[in-house]
Picture (cartoon, rainbow, N blue to C red):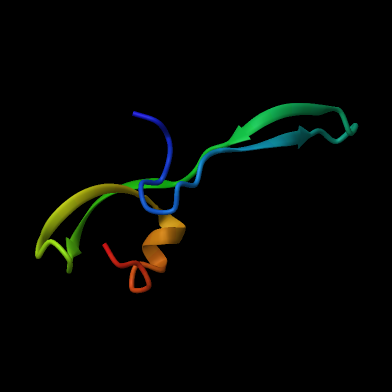
Length: 64
């Protein structure tokens, strides 16, 4: 299963890890995914989704 939010389609980010001597090495900043059950108003039932923590804070704006 991909590390991707099912609601907002967010994925990992590429970044640099910078040492004290300013040597840069590439790293991946993974998304904070949570397994949650969300009530669907359209389907009138609970659905299980992998949702990012940022989308979970804004779930009142999401219509599923």
